[in-house]
Image 1 (cartoon, rainbow over the protein chains, first blue to last red):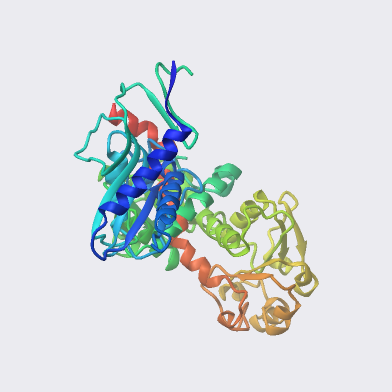
Image 2 (image 1 turned 90 degrees about the horizontal axis):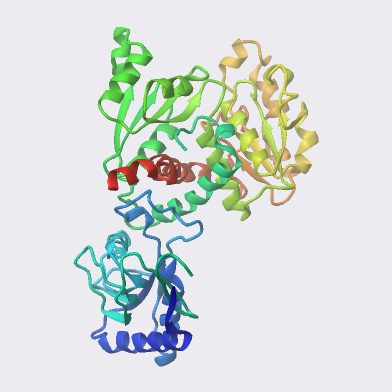
Length: 173
Length: 315
């Protein structure tokens, strides 16, 4: 059984709202940067960065991508995705870095991402933006910006794309 | 992948997978803190029965950048001097708990033999004249990076020098032909194996005749002891016929690149200073060595093929 829980329009509006919230929250002179987690968070980071530039065209918001596969605690259980390479070409030291991912679930990817980010430098602050928070956290991690809170069962499959968010139960489509 | 003993054993898909993984490692090595926890808790033992600078150091650096522990076995200070056999040495180290052996030995086939005596992964870091798979991966990756292409179709690799005694040549012939390159061997007949008809190569004895159609010129080291063994009459004559000088560099097509596995014999196969050449990839070969060996260790110890043992742990 598949259920579309967010339409393309819902996704677009959530991205715009998150962009506004990120700008609203930023205080002081710290550099703001957006880092998408490979791969699901990459397009979302692109979209949020584009929305921020649209809202405040004079703001310079560097954009990067982080592959956390080498920092995971379940290494070897997931294949390293070819081509999904980290790319952070700006100084992380002192910046406020917003990590972006499509789905927040156990929190393990975010933990790995925070550790991975530290190999690039010491950010002033790390924040977390996700399009969907589906619960079932296994670590003390909470998002700063959420597109939609979505209570799910452990067995549910959550698919996120710019065209919408689909939840599938029992593995059928 | 359980072991990396030869390029043929790795196969085309394995070569492509490791080259792809190397791009991730290159990025890690460019970070301010080039270290990731991927292999925390794993131990890599290097077992070098032959001298080596860059291979041993690059394997150790690779293991450390992935947070593995390293054990270095140096023959001169070990119980080998008390007559301990290779098998006893391997079993002793295995009992201490290692996950991978990196082995270099002067005899062909030792890595295969060692893999019969241990449950750990075995990486061949050079066995006799036979194979040196990580060097071939380094060379393929360096060409891929320099020319910006994944496949080598239409490219000609010319390997010059002591092919007969070269494990680097054997591994590179396999790896570059898997990726589509044509391979030409240039050497005096005394420095070629007796029969190369089953190799995917073309053979020439005159360097000047093949330079104009060479895209990748690969100079091998001529070990000076080859002269006393009667393989070459004298080093000056060898240099004349097979050494790389400014005239020969000028005969290469524009865009051709120069490689050498090191250590270089200046004045023998290398009559010019390669650092003055813009198309030399020799420095990249060394710097990519660490990234490629990180990819190999990661694939062996944490890649998809090792996942079965992890998921058992997790469940």
